[in-house]
Length: 489
Image (cartoon, rainbow, N blue to C red; front, side):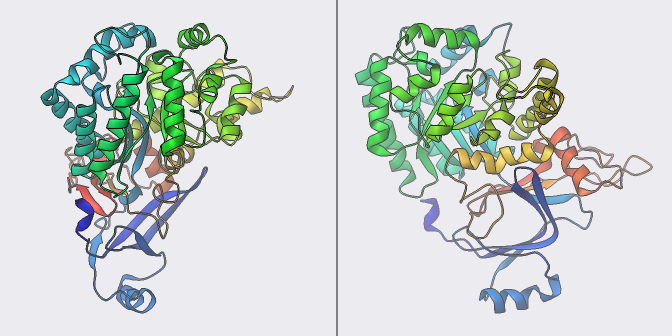
């Protein structure tokens, strides 16, 4: 098992940046973070000269020996940032990334998604897709991912094994789907067999993890229309029995909402369907939430559930806008999801930039905030919808961690949290000849899509990373103190 081998105590020296609160980012230009042999942050020194560090570490923290990892080369364009948390991604759909046609959600599922997912009954096919999915998300700095798998137990177990082997923190769920809306070639035979397979999958994933708490099962009713009432009820009972987390979709698309009303006429709303069947609670992550009513928002809040905001897929499948500001204002935890392959990238950085862009677009498409705007406050409420760079980064880290019950474990750099981190390199500043310091590809010194012209402060550098960066800026990645992506400098 991975955790049987203790790490070497390590001190990371350099610039580190993380979210303190929803709207505040902390930048420590010359800091030191000590990570112990279990991958846990043991201490943080923010104002300690390197020359004095050894004495401080021995005297204040009692360490006798350690390794040192120095970040950057004096150019002030390299920094450590917490690993990203992807709260909603469909691992088997990776080959369909970027394929939408002219479809919307329900037609897209039947045209593209179900045929692809059904093919993962083949273990060689599943191994190829899942290895690439986990490697790709890690390369983008995603240290924690909540994966939807397929209905197939062996392939779902394989995904868990690949995450464990590669060292990614993950929640993995076998999709439950026994309703008539699914094609005969890809569905559970009935609720009884679905629940039997889900129990088997939960046990298999737990066996892979072997008590490490790195790769965990999560109950996954695909979405309400995918399931009969019997299956939803059974999953709710299983959640109560096991205490497992739940992931599903909600109010992504108006046609989907109408379908739920048709299939569950006795329930007051889409949200009420989950609540009635015991699937709405503090361990539930609801993806999308574009079309919730005010009453549904209050129900989600009352039950302590969270929302995965998937701005890329919401836009490119034409589903709608998630009212993120209003959800946050109601006290509902919100994280980001790439929603591959409704989303065209497995990058949470791309989701963060799209979250900012979508929030600005909302100010021109909605006359006032959806919940509770008073007369005369329209302009102010519209401005309030906008998400800042700082807020988008919070959703990408601390927000996502809170959705998955990991807010005390990952998402920031604090003593007692685990070292899930990425080394970000923005490249050298541009020179007069356009050929200075190539780090990461381009001869002009820029790395990835980020170009630094000189004179940018950290606020501007971070903004350029969010809006122009990509996986080429992510040089190294650690999960629980172990390097899972080697130096790509």
